[in-house]
Image (cartoon, rainbow, N blue to C red; front, side):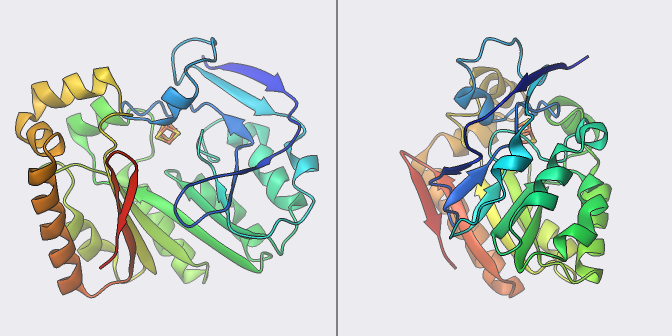
Length: 265
Ligand code: SF4
């Protein structure tokens, strides 16, 4: 059972350094999806609600706070998934979208096909894009890393439907880990119905000690590449060459070194 903490926020659009965005909107903080590698849990570690994935803050007044126009891209969300399971009942994201000024330039990233519920709302926005995180985890990998998430096939289906409905979409290939996530085959599988891609390599530091230990135990060669700049650099160059051959639009390849680094093709 997930603990729900009802709060009231002073503002909902906060400035961000996330590549390509000016603002971030988090109507939820905390995430039932509880990915093992989640970076948000570190940003939230000072909140003493218990284990990550077992609590969610719900900003009850979020929809009132989104009525005013802000200039520049708004990214939803960085500290949760706007379409985590409890959204189905609470409808907070839906209410936020309904009240949001439709001139706002909106970018939503999710791992859930629940996003398809709001297609008609998306069509009312002047500028919008919807991203689905894809990584191909299944079987034991999914059980270990993303136990509570919709399967790969549901995310692929969501991308297809968005494309059919003419909502701009993107594939967010993340967390890219050598030997675990096959970027080229994910692009091959989706390029007929995906407008563009972001590739994000794992943030090894922010993924946390438990995840690093899991990686060392289960995929020592992957860990050895991720933790060695020279090896990682060579691997990234190979991925970029592969993407060039596939001739798709890639917004950037994101690396978490001492700070963000975005490589363009
Ligand atoms: S969906 Fe995103 S915010 Fe939620 S647990 Fe997974 S990585 Fe963290």
